Image 1 (cartoon, one colour):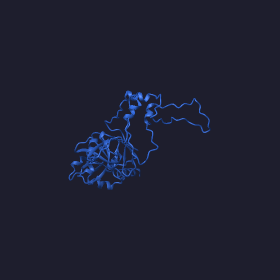
Image 2 (tube, helix red, strand yellow):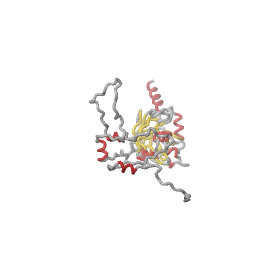
Image 3 (tube, helix red, strand yellow):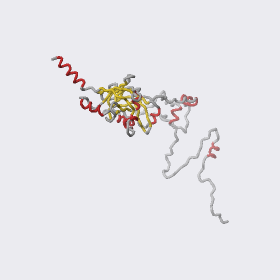
Image 4 (cartoon, one colour):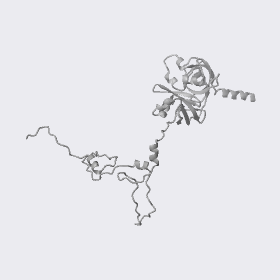
Length: 306
């Protein structure tokens, strides 16, 4: 009785597994028109016999597979797009062949797997050109619609504005390989390869002196915030020990402004052409340099009669 039970259990286990060996080729070797939908995604094309065998097995959907290189011990996880390949062959994207260290016609092993749903992934762009994209998360989300799985350590390729960007999958959760079909996944980016933080220019000696200098006297033409005298609500005098200290010069410079003209007429337009003299000139010299309105000589296009 026991000998009859063990073969039945082994037969049920085999009915859930699909393991086949195929010759691997890039999508460019596929007969027919160019298939950009396969090249720009993470799905493969398998032969019709694989579909016939998968339908007979009690496998989980969606169909996800692990591709292993029999020579270099490299592996990745993919989905399937169509079953139209020649018998004994599969066609995969070129970037996937680079990850698996495959040449045209190399032998690979394809095995169906069940992967957890992704909740988090982190990518590292392989070029600083990726920073030129305005909204990288939206671009990546749109490109990942052609993918079914993500595997940590893979370098995937996405096509945006007729340019290929390579991204290293640094981390995936909750496992080393996850499925991204109908999932809510948080995405983060690491600094691109070759990226350097911008260096801040050192401050000049004049700027350092201004920052560390203190104002020793007040200028009537400058505005000093919080420089007035305080009053108590109870009417008592403020102690002489409480003195208002002036802020540093670099703070006062930010609040420097002119004194507004509160008697300004809203229907009158004024232009202040006066300039402050840098040297210690007399008040009369300053008055001569001031702009005086309606002080010019009038001219007439018609000569006056004498």
